[in-house]
Image 1 (cartoon, rainbow, N blue to C red):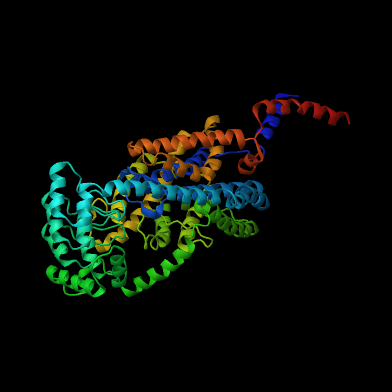
Image 2: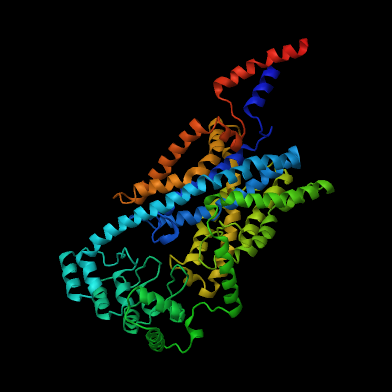
Length: 590
């Protein structure tokens, strides 16, 4: 047998089901986008005041993890769907629509179906168990904290005991959070209208604008519950009335918050007030501030139409966000996008169309139309809960704006393949676009979205923050996507065996990572180490364990064939190649 036959046979055996031509750079980038999800989920436990959004919240947190999450979330999944569209178009153009459908049924639909009976139940079980364990740990810590002189003084409104606690420990943290309520001592005192106690805290340099778990301040609490004495004291002591909590409300906005909601929370906190008392207290604060009516109070005025739309959007969001799919939602979205693509491809096959003009996707003109189009879905996301980046829809019915948002990236990937960008024009200026995206667009967009740094109001009036946020989020995601494509082309253009291994394993790692990450986060939750060390431990330990599981139980098994195509162990591959000439000779003799 000649060398050509040997080479061809070896390639066919080791790359069964694979395309004969690969885009190694984009394949590696797709794996990178998937693996970033592991780091993203590992970081959530270390974000301050994460609350009920994650089953494990570490006792040591750092604000930088919230920035990291936003920076990654702002582009990761859109980039993934863009690349998915690219490789879907590649398979369609090279093998035809029927082959594409069979391939995607094996690689997307079947793994999603199996995952719904394995991975998703595991996520539920681990999450519920971990949350219960974490709650028990907090109860023990709360019992210890409650016995401390500071919190004993806070719970009993005892100013004399507070003075003694401060005298005994001059370095005591007067802005620490209550484990139960997530409020600072000043915020608790203000919510109860204990103005005398609040005054002692302020006299000893408690931060009047210290953040609670919900990113609100003591002034938010005093204004929300209509505690006029405490509210007036805080204003006199220099409280910032423009600071925003995680719901983007200022203390002044809280003067117009729903009274029944305030009464319900007041009852839960055992505040000695009534709905009439809250309303009267708020009116006293308005008079103190010189505000006459509700329209003058709100920093960001809402018209009635926007309020109705928010209510409708909230109902749809609730129905769409029931976590049926958990982190496997991306597979469900790919099923929807594949169904749309099949219709598109069938029509294109009939028309013989080869895609839009290349200049539409590879020239700088693409920024104009693609940013304007993406603004449409982005403008209706983040209304209920401010977040930098797209909303997530994990329910049975995809949230329409979210599905449309990802469809734009998927469609661009399809058209980008047809553009045949052999020169790499799309990512050509990555050395410029990536720094601009990361160090200019992202900080501005993050501030206008969440308002955590405080410089947003100095740049723009509050009523323009939402519009600026939407524009900057969309600009960021496209700059990052194109920049990352250019960087990948620079670094990963050629064949790399190790990189190929990581690319193959990334699918499996992402499918199974969530339960393991949560367990590891729980294991180190109360350890007295810096959050960065815990984060690195979770990422490294989970990655090593999952890579071992891939090598031992997946790569050369039916599961590996399902996810990545058939792989033959190195020893068996040589034996299979050596068997080719014997079969060839037998065929000739017959």
